[in-house]
Length: 249
Image 1 (tube, rainbow, N blue to C red):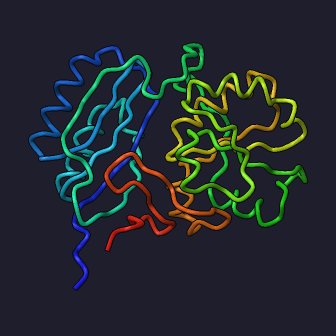
Image 2 (image 1 turned 30 degrees about the vertical axis):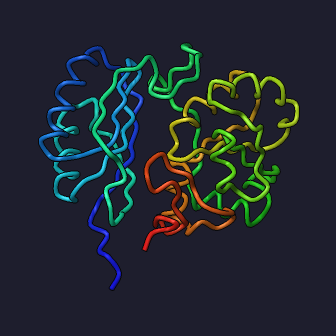
């Protein structure tokens, strides 16, 4: 008999100005520990990035508690289920950036780059162009080893080894993107928040980020135009288009 998938996994991020990260670290650690959650929460002046898992009622209670802080009210976690706890412990850390780019002038909290939703992107990929007739290309902003697990068919991959390499790759390749609608994508959307802003500032026109990343795309389209699985940073390693663990039961 198949094992019940009773562990709720959430991933979420939010770019929002935080001036009390040390105090937040302690309150978040205490709340998550009291609810027996495991995973990682990253805090920085620019916002929050989290990957947590536990019993459904406990995870939802934690999210409700976090949203009581007005700064975190817009948080929209992406969900998936597993039979086993994918994390070994709980970590709550304060970092310089919740996703490291080494370009402090890129501040998504002050204004998001334009985004495209999953269903619209799928429709564009069906047609081979956007609603204005421009060719559409997908640009993978993830690290090379993540891309190897799966990617959009025909996606541009610059084989970067870490996200802080992305800005130089943009400068090296930007002429190749002229005249096209460029849709940057990553696992859950956090890297694209910065990537799309940087590309626009580098003079590339018609740049969009995939809203919610691959995980949201899987949820809303079933993975159309995507080849392989999506790498995730926990014990499950990769999820298929149904957001199920690839090697799970």
